[in-house]
Amino acid sequence: MKHLFLSIALFIFIGFSSTAQDEKASFTNKNPHQVLTLKENSFFKEQPKNIILLIGDGMGVAQVFSAVSANGGVLNMTQMPFTGFSKTQSADAYITDSAAGGTALSSGQRTYNGALAVDTDTLDIPTILEISKSKGYATGLVSSSSITHATPASFIAHQPSRNMQEEIAADFIGSDIDIFIGGGRKFFAKRKDGRNLLDELKKENYQVFNSLADAASINTGKLAILTAENHNEPYPDRGEMLPEATEKAINVLKNNDKGFFLMVEGSMIDWGGHDNNTAYVVQETLDFDRAIAKALEFASSNNETLVVITADHETGGMTLTGGDFDKNEVSGKFTTGGHTSVMVPVFAYGAGADKFTGTYKNTEVFHKMIEAFGF
Image 1 (cartoon, one colour):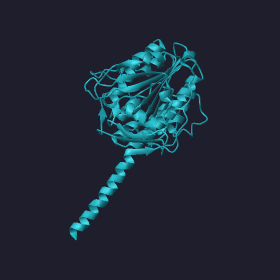
Image 2 (cartoon, rainbow, N blue to C red):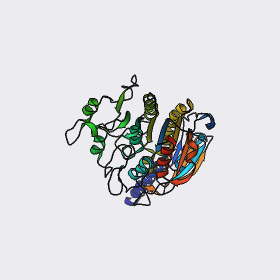
Image 3 (cartoon, rainbow, N blue to C red):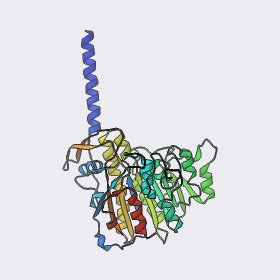
Image 4 (cartoon, rainbow, N blue to C red):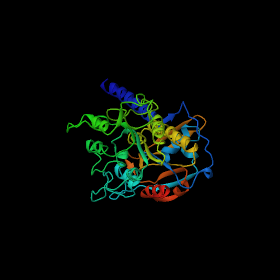
C-alpha cells in the first residue's frame, strides 16, 4: 500500500511539473498588435538631430523571432530597413554581464563585468548621454526595471560595481539629465546615508512624480518619474508603462531645438531568459516592440531622427522548437539560466541609419552614434 501511495504521489508531482514546464515552454498571443508602415528611409536627412537608442536586455535573434511568431509574422523592429550584428564580449570575459555590455554601448569602451562607465582601471569614461548634454542636447533615460539597474546606470553613473545602487542614484544629482523614468525610488529616498535625493532633485528644479499618470499634464522642464519602489512589475502586470514612458520622454525632449539623446531599456526580456520561460520572454519582447513603435512614429513624423535597436547580450540560450504564425503561437527551450556569448541583432531606421549594417563589436554602436551626430 505504501508503494502505491508513493507511486500516485510521484505521478501527480510529475503531472504538475510537466504542466508547469508546458506553461513556460509555449505561448499563444491573444492580443497581437498592429505594426507601423514606415516611410522610405530616403526621406531622412543624412545627419540626425535626435537619436533614440532602444536596448532589449537579453534579446537575441531567438527572442526577436519568438515575438515575430507570436505576432503573426511581423514586428515593428523587423520592419526597419538596416540591420547588423553586435559582438558582445566584455574586456575580461567571453560572456558579458549587463553592466559591461551597457558600458560598451554607452561609452565605446569595453570594461570588466560589473563595471559602470569606468574602464578596467576604474577611471570614468564619458558616455554618449553626457557628451550629448555637454553639446547642449536634451537627454533622457527610460527603463522598465529600476532606473539604477545596470543598463540605464551605465549611461549616467560611474561606479566600479553595478551593486552600488545608492551610489548610482546619487550620480543622477548634478547630471542635468532632462527626464528619467523607471523604478528605484527607494535608492533615492530610503538610503543608508540618510540623504533624500528626491529633495535634492527638487532643489535642482526637477519635478518629481511617483507615476506617469501624476505627470500626465507636464511636458516641459526637468522630470524625475519614479514608478516603483524597486523594479516595476513584469508585463502584463505593469500595463503599458514602457510604451507610455517612451512617448512621455520623447514629448519632453523634443522641446529642445538643438536635439536630444534618449535611451529606452526593455529590461525584463533578460529576466524571462533567466527564468527559462518562453511566455515571459515573448510578452516582454512584444511590449518592447510597442515601445519601439512610439520611437518609430516620432521618427516618421520628421526627417531628423535616428532610431537604433539592439541588445547588450543574449540570455538563456533560447531556441525555438515550434510555432504557428496564423495562431500566434510559439514554443521554445533554453540551454542555460545565464547569459550567452552569441551575437545580437542591430536594427536602424531614420537619419544616418545606413551606418549600422555589418558585423562589429558592441563598442561600435557608440562610435556609429557619435559619428551620426557629428560629434
